[in-house]
Amino acid sequence: MLIDTSAPRPGSSDTTGAPPRRRHDDAPDTTALFARLASLEDGPERDAVRDELATAWLPMAHRIAGRFRDRGESIEDLRQVAALGLVKAIDRFDPSRGAFESYAVPTITGEVKRHFRDRMWALRVPRRVQELRNKVRVARRELTQNPGSPEPSLADIAAHTGLTEEEVGAGMEALESFSTLSLDAELSTDDDGYSLADTLGASDASYDVVVDRESAKEGLRRLPERERAILYMRFFEDMTQSRIADHLGISQMHVSRLISRSCARVRADVMGQRRGPRGTGGHSATA
Image (cartoon, rainbow, N blue to C red; front, side, top):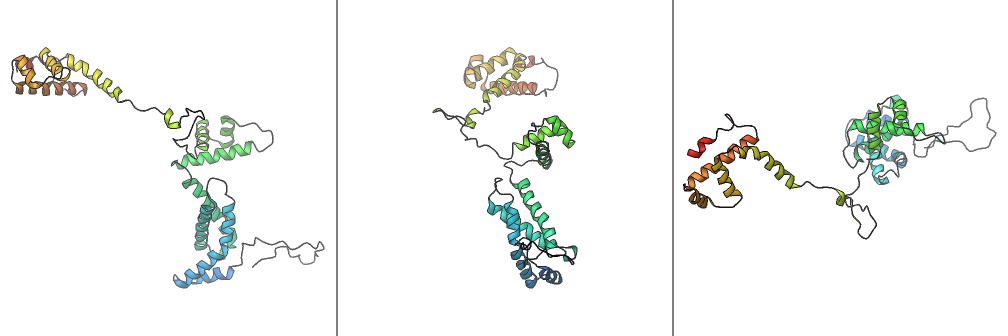
């Protein structure tokens, strides 16, 4: 039902001949339906009235969704989100509080904005950073709304919003972080073009070896000479325990015990967990 909002006031005449102004075509008169909905208990009849209201007001929800087109989300998805907001508005609306449209429009708009805030980021961004982003975006628009206005600095935006420059910087970074760049994105158009992934470094396992080797040096120096010799023969010359035993004239079991004990002492020394004073390993030579 279309409502004429331009009817002449009493005592006045309309001499312009212009057609009367009307509300949006997607704003039907559903006062009776809302009154009926409020009087019904949960059940099939109430669900049917609720569906009828949703169908009647759905074009308005689609119109609101259309305001957010071209922002990186498909119009069909936006209409789905707006329809969800419409259903929430119908469920929460109190007919005694005024016109449904006045309540539904901000409800639906808020639902669509929440969709962008919570669902459209490629990476999950903390709510606080999202709020900083919005404040910075609004401040930049307000500071540059006059033609010829220069791009505001961090200090300008901070003074305008009451934020610190550090917070403004975080908001500025978030402005550029709404979407991500694929690692396969080409960074060069030459024949030998390379992608973003080609520019990223990788951890070198050899660094861990260097760190471990340097950490073990002091512990190895404090071992008795024979134990250092056994470790050298075993791990650098790749000799078996049997050959080491024959070379030193001791049993293979003795060699095994010396290797295990020496490695344990070096490991404990590196980890700072040795028990007893350092440099007391001479007893192992007579073990």
